[in-house]
Image (cartoon, rainbow over all chains, first blue to last red; front, side, top):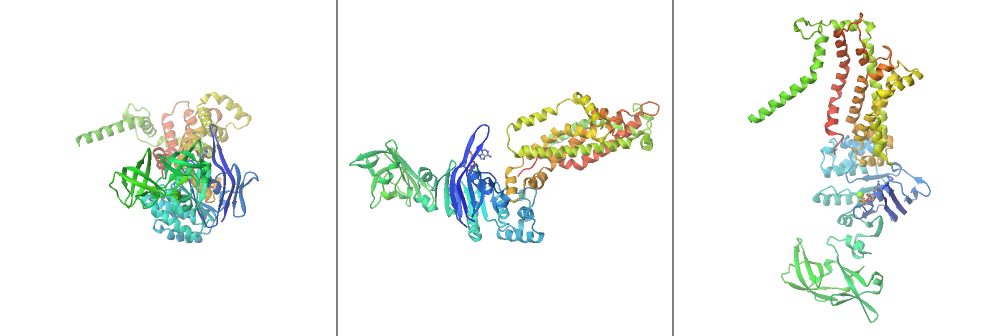
Length: 356
Length: 275
Ligand SMILES: Nc1ncnc2c1ncn2[C@@H]1O[C@H](COP(=O)(O)OP(=O)(O)O)[C@@H](O)[C@H]1O
Ligand SMILES: [Mg+2]
């Protein structure tokens, strides 16, 4: 099912404050797409998901499922969750504590008043798929985190929803389990081809799962794109900072104007500012960004070279993260080799630079 | 090891003394009800017999069984309705967002602290106008009103412990609000229902003042009033019969408490549900 959000907003009003949790969002999610919403905690991800699910009513704007309008403040249309055929997995799993695993998974089917025989068949089929068949008569309190999570997913998938919503479903698992569960969710989604919206604050999770990712901040979408796209072409500082396992190097520099051309001054190094980046200059300053893998130690040829002092070397296993200092700036450099020198030459190319 | 034994010994001694202190009147009641004399100070006069019980059960003019029946019906109906109304109110209070929720709860609690005596006069006039004096309804209505705040507080505390995500999950799974209440909230707060129901039941069963004012005879009179107004044929106080009657009326209460104590202990110690 295709999903379309038009100028969608949600404002929470309480006696003490007004929170614009979702602020004028426009979005189109394709049929069968794995779409990830990524953002720091409190940026409105859950609220956006709840709006799509029908757990919240929009303050303004419209939501379309396919060609069908499911929510519109202006046209006074609101279709409740049960008629949207959405399924949802919550961070706390939200299993019903008084029902065993079988009854938990069967719950949506029982509400639909499916006959006993079909319920049994469907529940067993989905339990087989998620490898929880031997847990069917356990109570939720007897399950481990990973098992609870599987049951929650089984309950979501059992009635073949047209949209699957996941709200930080992995954040209560420990790191090892998370990597496996991640791969499994991706596999299931590709198998079943369900349109999926996945909310997370973890950029690694977002990068590894999403066909496309929307980066959210303070109720607004900063950028939408494929994982590669967000990594290579961050549109602004927020996205650049948020994406990437090793935080991007960011340096605020002064501007120098020479022969009608603009340069950014990194110590005595003059770095060309491309014409289309001039708009980023604010109060005579610009921020330069460069990823640590684009800083090369002792390069054969590079557009710019600096002589820097080595401060700390962090072994990361396969690679080393080298913290260097040049003038008053510090950089992180990713290197395959361990170095022993106190001072090294570090080079980088114009094309790898970001300007914000 | 010896110290441990000593602590255990102290514990047993304390428990036994507190228990015997509490149960003393009950024990006195029991002994008198089964004896032919009510002078407990001279033990040699005490003879075991069922005569008191036979007497009160055989004499229909004493209406002992009527009183017990009235009490049970009035208490059961009023506690059931009280918990039913309270649970609907508590569901709304715990699930809806509206301003001054906490003050509303405090106000409700405050209203339950009114001394009964302040309204009993008016209540009599009121029930008289409605021609309800000496009917079950005359007691059921005030009992519901009187136990509602406590029931409501108990149910609110249980409901608000149930995570809202369960409501959301059920909503997504296709439930409407009423189904969520029946299928999720209700089974998860069973100990709360039973505690609230039992406390309301006991209040109604023990209540004296309203029952005294609003009933006239065995058609609606309840056990506490029945016991208080118990008189022998010649105006004397037949202690043996009174005690036997009291013991009889206690039996259903004790039975109910025993049946439900599992849930009450659960309710008192666990207070709802834990993930
Ligand atoms: N029911 C609500 N009432 C009032 N404010 C809310 C409510 N739900 C969320 N908010 C506020 O909206 C903002 C976004 O919340 P949320 O969508 O839960 O963020 P996220 O899921 O990204 O962590 C937060 O500031 C939060 O305090
Ligand atoms: Mg959230």
